[in-house]
View 1 (cartoon, rainbow, N blue to C red):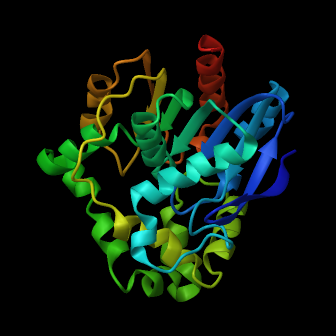
View 2 (tube, one colour):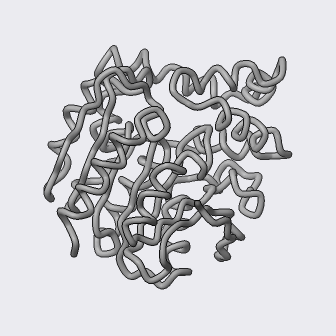
Length: 278
């Protein structure tokens, strides 16, 4: 069972779920769009039982205490800064970093910029950002898969997603996300300013610079039925990791790996942590 806490940082207080002993191996889990820390419920329980101290925050825009209004406040450097601030709050010099979807994009960036702080990286769904950027630029299949981003950046995205009892927002989660999680996410994102904060991640994103190679031990998990990420960038990711690298492909699983295939993902994550104890 996860515990609810608040994490004070210079940017504000992050809501978070935690599991395991506070003196256990630190693991930070970053959720994606349009979700929240609860997406890691299954992983938190197992990690806590394995003597890890697992922390899953509701990220910037999703936590009511860290919901700035300006698009610029959602640039990648701000998101990376949040990760380091949370780690600093707990006094973690090094920690294991796990991310799904947008959380994976942030995790790749943290590992690239601050390899001294990251013991291991586990990226779920989203590939290395340099591989992804190139695929968006050159691969027709990935271009089609990423076309939705423009709609999410539009000024009318909030109205469109929340119309008719959030029908289009709810549609994003299918298939793969349990109904009770969908209800939780929709409730959160109908709070004042919450959906705008979540969408500002897209509005602030600029995939036009390279983050460079990853030197820390890395596990990348991709699924064959992911509508947002094609095989081109997924298979190219290995060329951007110079440290120990493991790629796992889950068959017949959608984009929502942590919730649709929790047992498979958790098993791979534990194997990855055990393979790199220091």
